[in-house]
Length: 367
Image (cartoon, rainbow, N blue to C red):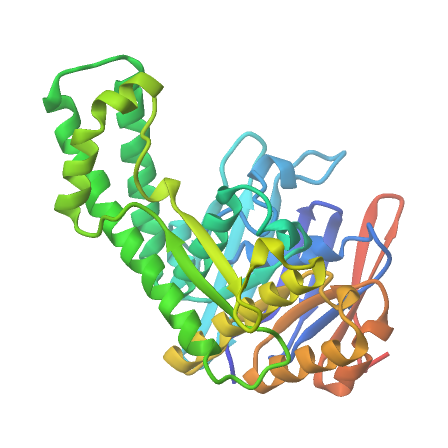
């Protein structure tokens, strides 16, 4: 059986005072009115991977109001070679804490237990807004293939923050920069290599795949640098320019992801809204296919409000691809009619809300 969330328990997590779901490896279709708390369940699952989840929320923002006490997410993950308990907690004013099988662990350790890919409505404007979102999208893909990508990214950001502090203080002594730039260079080379590898894997997963969704050609727009020595030399050469601006102007934090609708040879930014959405779905599915080809197991797939933007034919094609992958896909929608093509291939959760409190109920059969 594919890796999946077998139980999910929430305590004082956003709109959910209490919730518990006992699940198998089939897709999970979550339906209920807008604002009932469907995405909150999905967000809890996304926090089982490194980072701030699909909403990129700080721990304090997740606390249920008006109680204002700490929140908790507990999950049992099951599958081949898996059998772990994950517990995430956060007290007011404190960062999120992670425990795996009862022992404290860094967030980055989660990437070695579960691979999770997702698509949320906020990403619908990915190709027409700033590069930050596209970098995050690419880095989520890269992290799914290479759990060490998180450590390299954290190391780079920490060293860059320290270097930027020196630049703002107009420190000119090269000795203060050398060690930091070497750390940045090592991490930058690793980040760039992992991003390029992720793009190559996505291309291979799209090539010849039988899918109802259009293929996208991806390219990484970045500095023409690859090795640690090349990055270190470039950082040293740019100190004067960087000091004038008070920040580091080159490196992987300035990279961008470009996409082209392959069949039309058209940049994604110039495609219609529907085509842009279809390209995003295609990339998420390709990511999942590539992971299954590499590891033998499909990742968790989180698709928030995706069914509402597809016609019945495309919805059926999406559900067929997910089931063929064998992925535990979590999907949300306003009503059960959006999931009728899944029938008994999925498990169903209805979410309702009364006086600011959400209630999640696992149904014993398809609605």
